[in-house]
Length: 319
Image (cartoon, rainbow, N blue to C red; front, side, top):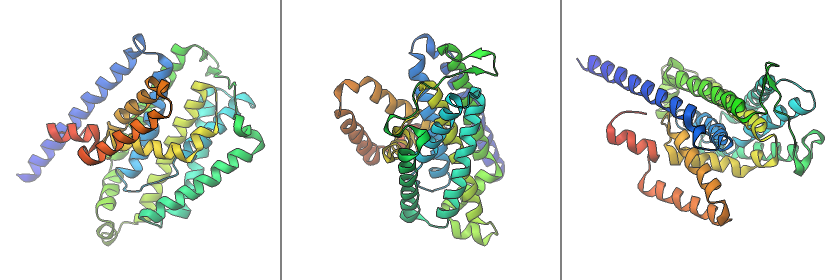
């Protein structure tokens, strides 16, 4: 009886998530009618970045303080491929994704055997090495970055210089990335990842190689973060040190916690809140950072589950 009730609840939860996903897709599809498309594209890029990070932290229990290295490095690769090599935008994004996945594999092999603060500090140290490489490497443009990156033509046919075409391209990438994360979470791999997060010793006693599962999750997370970075470089036609700086790693942590760590839709909400604050409160200058800090403290003290976590707890449905 209990198994039947659990299966029924799981089926209902899955159905509710499908409804929420469809609603999200419709809202994003019609949003450019009222909201500036470039702003929405920025939100989707950061939402994908935060979702990739949430896969690692919220479902894998691994806190990376250096995730910006995957987003930023992929941005440089995609920008260089578009401007210097003249590749099509889809190839630029794929190349950025592949480069960040490779970097994540190398970093993961070095850091994944550590836990807690040691894992976080190793990722931060390696991210700083990547930052200084991007600062000194001749093809990155140093402090100027890679500017005037051409958006190109999708499949050689669709001109992405038009914001509407670019928006459809970014929306497609975001939805595909979101669906991939969703599939990973609800797959047997995702269930094992949650088990490792909750009780790694018990998972090991059941015969699972926990390091291998965590490494695979790290690579998937890094690859999707690179997808977000490569796409963002094409949207803004710029790859700069901002996206590979340690502060960007802190920002994605903030997005995840504000939206709801370990929830499916939380990173999207968190990214929307943080990017909206940066955009609409830009005239306040440095006060934006202080306001973000206050919101972070309030969330930690009063809304520890984040926005979507509190909503899901209230309605008793995991979104």
